[in-house]
Structure formats: C-alpha cells, structure tokens
Image 1 (spheres, chains in turn brown, red):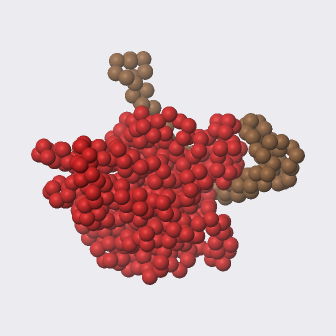
Image 2 (image 1 turned 90 degrees about the vertical axis):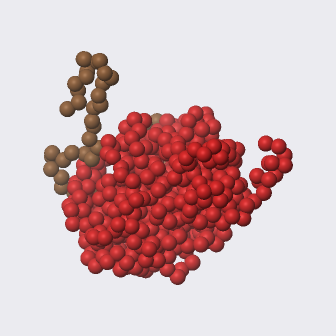
Image 3 (image 1 turned 180 degrees about the horizontal axis):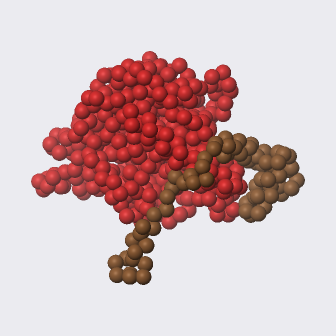
Length: 81
Length: 478
C-alpha cells in the first residue's frame, strides 16, 4: 500500500498520491499506473468541459428545491419560494 | 399441496412454454381467459431458466418459491372471479440492484452481499407485482453498474443470447440476456450512461430509458444520483409500453421523482401520424461501424426522416457525463474504498479512485455545462419529435475483448461502448433502444430519442419501425 515507492505519472501522478493520502484512500503500487491513466483521462475530459465559455450567471443543472414542512409547523411552513 | 398435485403442477404445459416465448400481453390475455394457468407459465419459465441460464449467466438469484406463490395467487384470484392486472401471470426479473424482499441487494458486487436481506421490494418491483406480473428473481450486472460489458468478476459474465462467446452488454447484462434469450418476457434494468440501451443493442431487444425523474428509484441501489434512471426491457413495443405504463406514478420515497402526470402510452401507440423525425449527425455519424450506420439508415427510411441535424458540443457533453459519473460514483463508495479495497473488481475500483480525487470545481463546471446542453437540445425539439442515433458503435464484442478499432483508431472497449448513449442520458432525454437486425449474426439497435417527458413519441416511433418489419427482436441462438 506504500504509494511513495511507486512514483511516476508526472503531475497527475503526484497529485493523485497527495490527494489519496489526504483522502485516506489506500492504493497498491501495482494498481497505481491504471489509476493515473484514468485520472489523466478524466482531467483531459474536464479540460474540455471547463474551457467551454459559460456566463458567470450559469446555473448548474440540479436546482435545489426546499420542500414543505409538516402541517402545523408555523416556524418553517413558508420556506417554499 | 399434495405430492400428486405438486407433480401435476410441475409437469410442463406445452401451451405455457409456447406462450412464454411470445408477447407478454398475449400471455397475460391467455391467463385472464383461463387458457393457461399462471402456475404453468411460471413452471415453464423456471424450466427454461434451468436449461439455458447455465450458458447465459443471466440470473444470480431465482426466486422460485416466491414465483410459484405469486402465480398461485393469480390463479386463485381468477378462480374467485376477481379482475386480473394487465400483466397477469407474466414472469419478469430485475437487475440485482433492485431490492427484492429477502435477498441482499448485491448490485453486482461482492461487498454488498454482506448486507442484510432487503425488507421490502423496490418500488418498481411492487408496481409490476400490482399489475399481476410474477417475480422470477435477480439478474446479473456489472459491478456497481460502472460497466458497459455485462461482465462480472464475482458472478461470471452475462453472455450474449445470439452467441455466448460475445458480451451481453452492460451494465444491465443479465436483464438483456434474460429477455434476449427468452428466459422471461420482461425485465428491469438501470441506465446511468447507457446501461439499458447497450444491452438492448447487443442482445437485440427493446429497452426504454425514460426521462430522468420519471420512474421511482426508491429501494434500488444507486450509482450516480445525477444520472441514474430505471427502465424496462421487452421483446416488442406493446409489451415495453405496457410495462412502462405499469411503472409510472408518484412516489414520495424518491426525491428526484418529478411531479408530472404520465399518461398511458399503450392506447396511442399506433397513432404516429405527423411524427417529425430527423437523424442526428456530427458526433453520432462518426466512430461507428457500417452495421451501426446501416441500422440508422433503415430506421430513418422507415420513419421518413430525410434531414440530418446536429446537437452542438456533444463531445463536451460526453466528457461532462464521464467526470460527473466518476466523481459521484466515488462519493457513493468512499467508505468501501477505504474499508474493503480488495473486494472491488479492480477495473471498477481504479476508476472510482480517480474519481475520488477530481476537484469539485471541475464537477460543478460539468453540471453548469449540463444545463447549457439541455437548453440546446430543447431548441432542437421545438422542430423535431424524435431524433435517431446509433445505440452502440459496434455489435457485441467478444467476451474479454479490451480494444476495438473505431474510425481507424484502436480504442479501449470498456469506456467507448457508450459513446452514443452517454451524451443523451446526460440530459435525461427519454430513449427507446430499438433492435434493427440486418443479416449479421449479432444484432444492433438504434436510439429513438424524444423530448423530455415524451416517452410516448419514442415508443410510437419504435412501433412504426416494428410495423414496417425494420425493428424486431431476433430469435436467440440458445
């Protein structure tokens, strides 16, 4: 489980090692190159997405909708917009 | 039941076996009319599973005692003169991420089978039961639904009913194999990035991925909350529509369920006049094999679709779905990745670990892009009712195959089977996957994509293709 021995994978590899340590997620050295490969693929995908120009006002697709409180709860019964 | 009565009930009824292999609605009508008993049909299905499942590996649990009890209850209801449901006595089975009372919901994993048995059926299992259908068991799937192949390292691989050396497709592989192989007329699966449409294509059956938020996901094991859909598989369009109709309805137990009425689709299935149909070009006209494009061309001809239109930025949409899937999937499994890393399929775990470290800012960008892409799709649907695209770039690859060549480039099989399905489920559009077999041994399907909440339009288009003899479920080889 010691990732420090494995190394490699460039910046994505270094980022992966640090982030997995922070997240307390174990990874065996023999599986590490596969995870680096998937991370590099995902980061390339993310670059494609994040370079698309969107206005500052762009809303994410999921929009939170507060629900109705149980009947009779006058304190919070009117939260629905 | 006495021993002779038990023997009589288990003796196979040739009519039951014949009806089992045909349309579910014909089978239900025969049971309602008393031409055959629900028990005889259940016995025929159990016999078919016993004979063929050792080849297909579609089932992970056969709930024979439950099925017999449900079938006997149907027969008792009929004997008492009480009305029977639209799917009375029709055997069905569900991907093993649906809760079935008394079974641990394994979701294709080793880890989850240590969970306590489910205390109650999933909402959609209850709804099929309320329509009279008989639950035969749980179906194989790719681990935690993070899969397009139908292969499972713990339960063996689902096999293709047209050639068991090939993949069933995933992640609802057992759902595709069980219906494609005529073990049951109906099944349920889930689709996050293509997991209903891919097995439909590979196994040559009809599948419906409804609009996101249309069907209750209550008491099913999730994968990606933003993208998870549940839906049915069948061998013809009327069965698919009738099953979908039985599954709709409000449910306070699924917070993502939309507050929208769903009109029954079966009554209007034949009323396809005036349907405006176009073919999706651009991304959807690249990277496929000739068989995929031939299926689209034949579907377009039958539907009178002469125009090709484009959705913008499809590659970005697919990329956004890809990273949302990775990140939300990782969030779901974070504790298990720490506590039981060695019990995952490594092919699943390695992607979840990458997802666990993706920066949140990038995922938020993807969710903002999702709304933008959704709005562009709605603009297209102002002019069109149904858009045709390939379901998969290839027919089923061989089991264990890791690479294929698309547009002259060697690519990984696992992530790229879903190149045409992933951008569509990304924005939750309803899709019927309709099999359009050519002369080839292995079938392939097209996607009939409709505007949100217009499952009826996709089903009508599928029915046009079926009536024209273009779309049909080919006979299995097993």
